[in-house]
Every structure is written in structure tokens, then in C-alpha cells.
Image 1 (cartoon, rainbow, N blue to C red):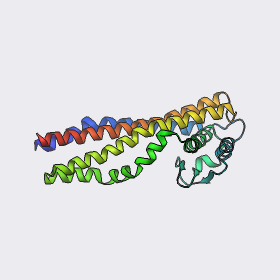
Image 2: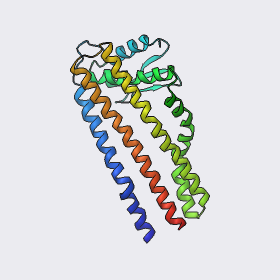
Image 3: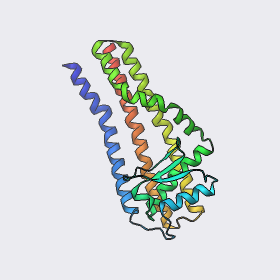
Image 4: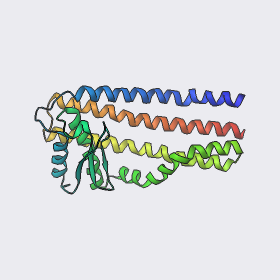
Length: 231
């Protein structure tokens, strides 16, 4: 009985605070994006137009731009060298759309210039994909069967997820910084429009901070559980 009490106490101690931060971050993104998606840019660029112009100005004519369904599903795919923009960004001339499009182009620029944190993140993706699927099951199978080596492997694999989240922070913050510099210097947005784009990208960045916090707290929870079982 004591084990199960401690199990649920661990949940409230480690995961609940991180979950609250994650929810708050998601709400902030939704509200901020919704607000500035209604503010049209003065120069009338759409997300796709801005993305193409920024890519071309960086000598990245070989990087494609595609439309992808969904909301805020925007991303840069380094495997196919394509920037994919969502329904709410591709044809939209809003401040939010241009900010998001410029951010994704920032990842393409990072790839082209060999940005080190992006290289590191790409290198650990395979381990992260494996770890995210089997780390927790292995950990608890090891606990149930008293196979300590399985719990250790589970913790090591989950640590790859934490490392991925950690490396993701500089990648995302740098892409946003590049985006804001470009849209201001090249006058895609002007005045208060730049401030709006900055608020959108800052809110989005907080989701990555929340993701890292959640991963760290989950790892600490696994270590706490394993530590009690070994006592």
C-alpha cells in the first residue's frame, strides 16, 4: 500500500506542476496567436510570400514551400528541404502568420549554415524516437520483475528525451531571433506589427520551455521511484 501511495505522491510532486505550466503555455500560445492572426500586416505579405522572400534573400532558392493542413502544424523538414505552412499561415497576411513563417524559415537558414545545436538535435533524434516509445514500459517492467538493469535502461533511454528537449531550446530561440531580425530589417512588418510577431513567437517558445520542464520532472520521478525500490 505504501508503494502505491508514494507512486501517486510522486505524480503530484513531480508531474502535476509541470503539467500546469504546460497547460498555461498552451493557453498563452492559443490566445496570443488568435489575437494577432486578426491583425493584418500593412504591407500585405502572406506567410508563404514572406517565407519565399526570406529564403531567396538567404540564397535558399532550393528550399521549397508547401501548404499543409491543420492549425499551427508549421514546420521545416530538413529531410526534404521543405518549409511547410499550415492553413492559418500559408495564405494569411496576418502579423501572426508572417512571424510563424519567418520562424520556420529560420530553421532552414540554421540547416544551411550548419548551426551546431540543430546538428546535435538531428543526431539524437533516432535515440529519442526509440526512448519515447519504450523507456517508460521498460522501466516499469523492470520494477515489476525486479530486473534492475531494465529500469536502468529505461532511465537512460528517457534521458535522451530530456537531452532532445534541452537542445531544442537554443534551436527554437535562435530561429525566432533570426525571424524577428529579418522581418524588421527587411520591413515585412513595421512598428507595432513587429511587437505583435514577437509576442506570438515568445508565447510559442514557452511551450518548449514547458516541454523541457515536463521531461526533467518525469526523469526525476523515475529516479525517485527507482531509488526507493533499491533501498
